[in-house]
Figure 1: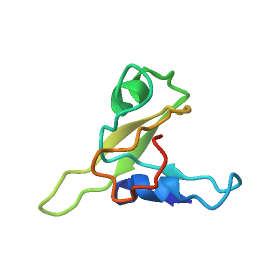
Figure 2 (figure 1 turned 135 degrees about the vertical axis):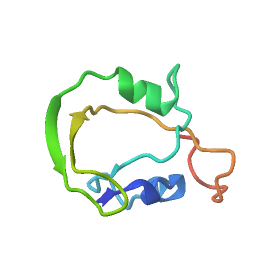
Figure 3 (figure 1 turned 45 degrees about the horizontal axis):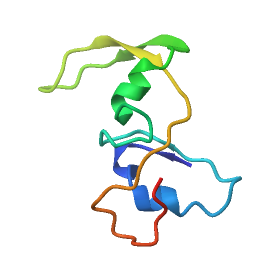
Length: 93
């Protein structure tokens, strides 16, 4: 499954049906991790695996056409359950 930022929901991550189900989420919140840094700093410290240029077309009244650089980094990060978690049975990480 692939989610954009609106899919950044801890309760959903905690309810994956089995170990064969994989989830790729674009993070919206800088979540706490079990490491010594929060999520965004942890990801920024991972090595860049690939970089590519993407042409973004103009949007009338919103932006000019431009070329954006996309850096791809990935790794395993353990995210901690937030204090505002609505599921009291959700795992701690």
